Image (cartoon, rainbow, N blue to C red; front, side, top):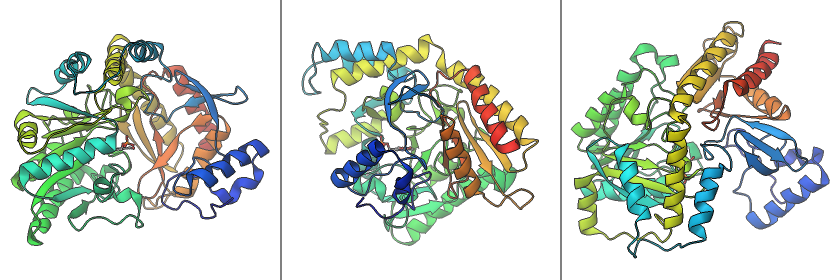
Length: 443
Ligand SMILES: Cc1ncc(COP(=O)(O)O)c(C=O)c1O
């Protein structure tokens, strides 16, 4: 093993120092990863998992054992969904080019996507990842505002490019924030109570004021509208309204990062921002858009995109190619045909109620929160003043993995269980998770 350090900045990371208990085959894969991929890559879990096949909400390891996926939002409409796979294969066997030729796949897809957006959002540009979407959104915001100041939440994650990692504090102190970046506490209603939204909006206003005091003109705030890396904050719906107002008052743009909350995840419509009744200036998307195929997008008000287009040209070789667009279209078909937004609401509600019921007999469960099929379960030291219990969260995540149930943890203290299954999750699968959690936490 050449990788000797643990992974301090990633929640639920495998520690290579624990490789001894693994099989010879697993150790060989670790050795090849370390030798060829280097030390920046991380694996999940005390004991990593090696999957060879996926179907719906199930992943299968090399021995054919099934694992219940309660974590992956990339294969959002289910692993290897046949309708999506068929669309991909069909278009890949027909033609794949790029946006410098006339093509209708991109237009049909754009038309359909834009009908899911508020009327004010009239344009879409395509990328391949959420990071690229956020990077492009930053360029657009800089062009439109003439500023560069960015506000994000304290443990936000928005991506890996040089520009975006500079406003992704969850990457840890080894990845410095830019001098043009200010962070604000997330709207943590568990700790701040009913005032959390107002306090959040106030902090955003103060952060923009601080940028100005330092001679930095504001460009944008980026909000992951479910605050996934900050610990999952969804309630009360509507609290983003004051944030948008504070942002506009500062002359900046409101960017809704929908990489996590978008495409029906919250069970309250297609988009996380819509749940809050706000119209963003820019919306960025990624992961769930292609159910595993790399496609992302930047949506914005027409005047914003047009102002950018007057000063820059845009060509992204793979962004918006016909195969990606047919895949994206098929994902939208599945969301619609299988009523996955309703499913996220109903099954998510069932799961949340089950977790809340469990919380009544488990003092370590401090809070159960979220919307639709994105639920956070905050674990705290029992009978303490909400002291985070990261050790317990890590134990539960890994004990569940040993029972072949996949979740992870999130938040600044890594003490919030992150429950975020594919949207085709059912009540029977909720019962499997609830049964295991009951045994582990209340047993
Ligand atoms: C909120 C959010 N924004 C952006 C990204 C970056 O997306 P990608 O990994 O596709 O670049 C992520 C990835 O986890 C994310 O969670």
